Image (cartoon, rainbow, N blue to C red; front, side, top):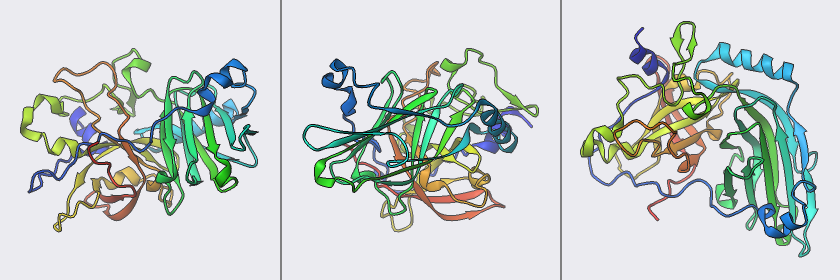
Length: 341
């Protein structure tokens, strides 16, 4: 099998030419709503409370983690993280701190030694109005959030993007007016064992499994065309392409897809992807925790050395239809795609 055919076997590169201009709106907002974690404030830092007001949980032993990694590698070569089951919530983990005005703050530090990245998955998340949820690395350089009541879904499950560190801090702020209304339960922390950017691995050669290439940023084959090299020909369609951070029974991985309109042209946010992206679901469906990255592309025709921005994303979907023989998967996003701001 050639490199191009191997790459295509694990990644969908579909571009649907849709009639009618203006269907795809440029995504300039993201699933999170910005802002700064409360613990980043000068008052916390001046009192040196940032380390005191947090408790630490280690997800598993090194031996257990290695076993889970080996299981993930056996299942699929597009997985970059192994699934580690946990049970962390607002009552059995973390540390609550009552603030002077009656508001309160909950923080939990999660560690998995040797991880290149960590991905936090919630089996129940409900944020009341005024509440804010953040995830960040130990240095505070990478921050996800704020996630607010606008991120609530009927099923309450929620998936995040990766934190590029072996430690992630989960911070939840709850105003006095909604005290006790928030729900936060973490059922998995996926341990990143495979680099997904060239910055993290100076070796530009593809990783091999069973004699075939595994996929990560910087390992595209010659048949995978840089969209910035084709001019304005695909200027509308390119905005519908998504890089998918998928969740499976054994870990987190990559796939791709594209927005597709329907015959009613009512802009229902359908995503066309591949059924093999969900092959490793273990009889379950985790698509409500998948993250869909938009505008994940090079700004120029010259291929970048660093990974593009991952800031523009939407989380969660439901399965509309799938068919194994044609490797077909149709999803519907749970959240509306933000319009141009």
